[in-house]
Image (cartoon, rainbow over all chains, first blue to last red; front, top):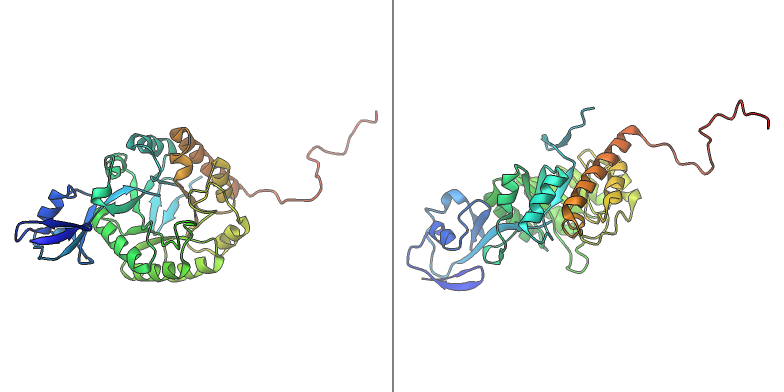
Length: 66
Length: 256
């Protein structure tokens, strides 16, 4: 399954969940969030959220900032 | 004398809000948090793969300080609302420092998009603290739509030019029904003290501490300045006059 994570093309196993992707991206802990195709997915829904072919995922985390 | 600092019904233990941007290391942030006595620190939201140098959230959490995510870098209301929603999920807080900038060179707030974003976020249940121009009319509009504070700039972000238009800050304060927090432009302690003397309820600063030669020492200076300025504001300064007014009695002078 091909999709885009933070602008970079990635190939992932079929039926990968958002929760699994967040672990792969080292972004599963507090401070991180995800949007799929521009829609924010609440943390509580990551386990049940199965990623689809062609999806665009943004994985964000808190960093230093004013 | 009790003088609680309240935002949206929540008391913060310090009137100094510390931005974490610009610090060379997590250790510097940690030392600055402690030295400043701050009760709230800002963070930005960025792509996870761009994050480096450890987790700022770990440092903030360890010190028991409240986190205030910002929408730094956003140019449109759409981007800012999305970023605030991501921050809410990431950090489990409804509070957001709303920042919508016009361009990279000035980093000045984009007022039309800012007001739009603020209105949307208030509607979505956020506690909105907008970084705004030192424009009393825009500040009034932001209050009217339900922002929990207004945060006018003293001068451009990171410039260290201090408060360029103290009259506007005073005017914003005089009309404010929510806390006014000076955000951006502070260069050194006297700028922070002046903000408080003008009637601001708090000061938000980052670069002046994180980029100082000794960040922890400057953080301590800022804490003292904010406190001194607040006390002076409460105490009520003497009016300015054009001529001298003796403080020693004129009566009873010896004839020499």
